[in-house]
Length: 220
Image (spheres, rainbow, N blue to C red):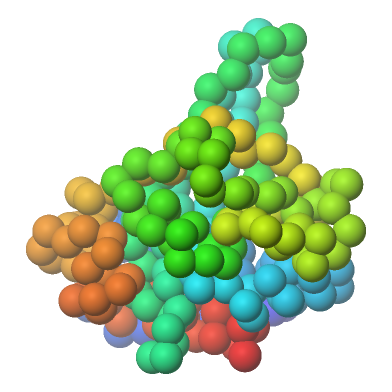
């Protein structure tokens, strides 16, 4: 029922601002991911992280598939919080490759909560490979992690995932997070870097209002 009501709310946003594009579809899926994850019964610890975060990278549908050779990937949006509230989103991709004995398909919702300025500037680079920069601490919240305080201890970024409705402590080690400049241009109508969107607030698309409102609701 909540999901149906949220879809109805999204439909009320002016049609001109919600051109049926891949970019808007990703923003809408990210809004639903925020709604579903942070309203879950077992979400108290991740809510605590969101309330102290400087930004969030939301990846509503990351696929992992393979047999012997595997890989994963998906689209993401980055939004940053300051005194004005949550920013309009900048577009990113996340991807990784692996080799080993594996089979099957996995579909996950992944959120990276950015807790420090150092972590934020790492994400704002055009490309950031998790684990490649030893000065950026990335912790995984989920299996083996007890509570938000433990997960965030000395971490710049904390990741968590939901796979088929359950929180999972999946490793993102080696994953490459890349800015998607062409999608920024398509969504805002002119070329913009991620920093211009989320820090300088040089552009806005009313179609992202439900996402920003949902994050504001849960972050307080």
